[in-house]
Amino acid sequence: MMNPDVLTIGFARRATAYKRADLLFSDVNRLKKIAKKGKLQIIYAGKSHPNDQSGKKLIEAIHGYVKEFKGVIDIVYLKNYNMDIALKLVSGVDIWLNTPLRPREASGTSGMKAAHNGVLNFSVLDGWWIEGHIEGFTGWSIGPAPSEVTLTENMDTKDADDLYSKLEEVIMPMFYKNKEAWARMMKNAISKNAYYFNSHRMMRRYVTEAYIR
Image (tube, rainbow, N blue to C red):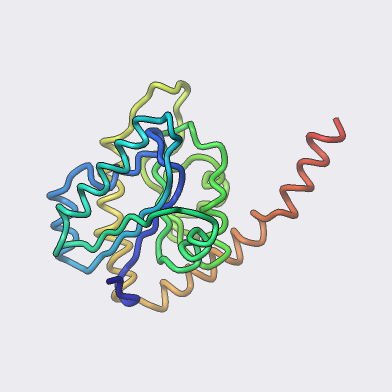
């Protein structure tokens, strides 16, 4: 049911509350209006821990949105998420969406893998994206700069508003009206992110900053 010519957002990771898989649906009416300006499709995948009830409810909620947006936005939630599905997603979507509640993101390796494939990250400034993000060059940020000093601060409203604004005013127009600029950003993601965020750097830092000490 997916169309390769339609802007495709991918969201695949462990289903748990702080990752806010449903942030994209904070304002369903606004999202529906955005979808009228340009076609959009979304692919979800991910499992929750068996004892994570909030994670299970998130998956259930996404399935509800699949039905609610039928005929407006094509949304699928892939079953049995595994490494093979993950590989297809980080190399096959156009946008890699990441919406964790700051400052809870430890790293964000899926976003790094997406960048290696020229997939553009659209992410909250947390984890690796604080280092890898160059606005409008390697991808786009969601919400304000990271300034939280506690785990209790909530930026849902600001983050959702920024997500909608950039999706409508920046990302979709570029994807549909300026393919050259889009391709240039894909190359930027590979040249600026992929060369730096890789397993060689990881092992080097483990050896020099952890094992030797």
